[in-house]
Image (cartoon, rainbow, N blue to C red; front, side, top):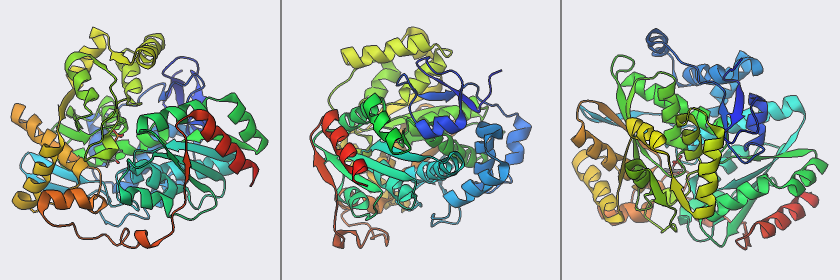
Length: 475
Ligand SMILES: *Cc1c(COP(=O)(O)O)cnc(C)c1O
């Protein structure tokens, strides 16, 4: 019988992997992504009942729907309450009304000031639970375009059973993003700067995770390999919660709501798609991107060449190969693993993503897509600052503008635009847009005084492999 607490790989090799192994291993054995065998659905009455829950209660409820009997309810409640401990806002995810049809969901009050804290704080608690019960250690390999790195480092720095290797593209993150990672001084945290792009880092991470030699070396140290990128199912799961939280606040389940989501690796918006698949009345999911707009091309035409990433003012979305798109393809093909695999292989080999007409139709049924160039991003930050007294970061600005465009096309539904990072994380861009620097955030103000530590490595799998082996062997 299919249940949510067991997962399959999008490429077909693993069909019955328990939640615990899915969390601990990250990537499936055939380099596919894990997805629950079945998505639980809730009735209108059941959604209605969830309205009375606070954030942590809602989080515990959603996680329990997907972890089933594999974690005791008390433990889940504990995980949910621990994972919001370091958030600074009492609402955890405050919802700011902008006008009748538009709200802004601030997802950046966690310890590293980006929405990724939601996912990583929960994931690290899940790691800790399973590592203790299974008496295991973990070697985590991650790639970051900026914000995943600091969120993962912050979440894992006090976890003695975890060694974290985090790659970032040398010189392509913002200075503050880099400092948030490289100034953390902990023996289990290892920062690596790769001379390449985020896509290069992500490719190396995936290759390392699938490398038998590295798995053997990990095993010699009583550890397994895992991922903290949004290829890890646990991250997506944690993100479903704020879609439900926000939708219920603006009128669901009676009234459908749309979400505008600044997108890169497609993890965040994919969590929205799962919320919709669970029966939450979501009207449209609006993909918002910068000029690296492969997702928009795909939504419009069903196929697109994979081009080189070109840097933008919203660096966390400077991505062309969106990992989580694979999960969407798998679900929209009615869980056809061989079709998914052949689309993904063709993408890798021909550097072209090409969907079947059936999948493309489905995408158009659920998703809209809009992209902004840097100039429009600056204008949007300026507009919201002067017209709405709301200071937003460049990623959130891309989402807000996409929300406006979607409203212009279909004004009948409320849109929630997701605020993915705090404006204080991007002071140069914010002051370029508004003419004044954003107020400093206390969590960021002392970073430039701290010593940095990272290793600069060449853009290839072997050099990172050698580095990891050397670090692990010397411990
Ligand atoms: C990671 C990130 C995004 C993109 O999210 P995905 O889940 O990768 O699509 C958008 N904005 C910010 C600030 C981010 O850190």
